[in-house]
Image 1 (tube, helix red, strand yellow):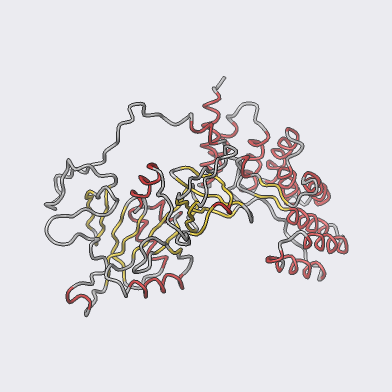
Image 2 (spheres, rainbow, N blue to C red; image 1 turned 90 degrees about the vertical axis):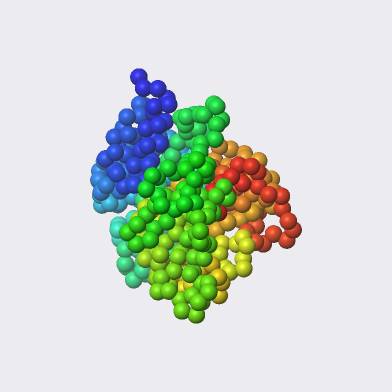
Length: 439
């Protein structure tokens, strides 16, 4: 019989396979777990739905709700499978069962159980109405949507109003379901025991040693926290970075990141057709890009060196003269504004591309108070910690990343970066090390 550690590892690898869209590998890994608990059965059902096999998904969700009769999200997904199989009466029954398991609450948050999903009462009512439409129960569907509107946040009511108009015109609705790719993940405390431990505690030094490197400033024996990759045309080479994560000097003359915009001397009057663009990830990468390039072009350039960050990261920029605040770049309008701001400074456009666990960093916040974790999914905070926000769980909680750890924390314990009214103590040694690598 396989050990518990092996089964947890398969669970973890299975969730990673789901994230990259490898349905066959995910199903193989999940099926290798003996005496599958309800959460694994749920995962199998979600993968079958994603693979376009609602019949197999229905069997898996049957097992999930049989093993856990209180799993509201399991009834929701089983209803979706029945709906896709055009078993609308069974779907209606499943959606009513999901609503019953809410027990009068407005939502159930599954984050602490490993599923990044918050089941809302209005969503279940919406699905009830979608099944009623298929059964020709149009007045009942309209009444159900009116109940859903009463449980919908005021600031986002337009969506249900539109659905109500559709039902009154006898236009059917498609049910809502758990977002594709979201499945139950193993508890973090179990994964920690699977990672190898360095009992010596020796620092790991990365030092490039490339015989063909012609830069006189490269010292192969010089310790470097991270290498710096410089791309220029078809040539690429590795050179050491300084302990702060910034590029080290490369012999006579300025290094590639000392004057990213090429603005210096006569260059300010006659700018070059391309400028040096500095993008901060786990690596510092200097890219040559046309001035005013679009986001898609920047991601293409970044993907040549760091494919994962280019796909998963969130671009942010630092305005000239701003020592600490990074502003997200969600679209082209914000990027072009950043280009205009960069033209006023001597260092060109400075970007970050950050992400964690496949999620982009939306913004950064600073802890105003210490927060002691109440459960395995909580993220402990110390006053002064700079936290990457990955998503808003609800009106009171955020999910964030700090020192390599991801978890949830109360929104009221933090403020936006740059909004602190008084100096805060710096982050602990571990946080400082991570910040040094990124900046």
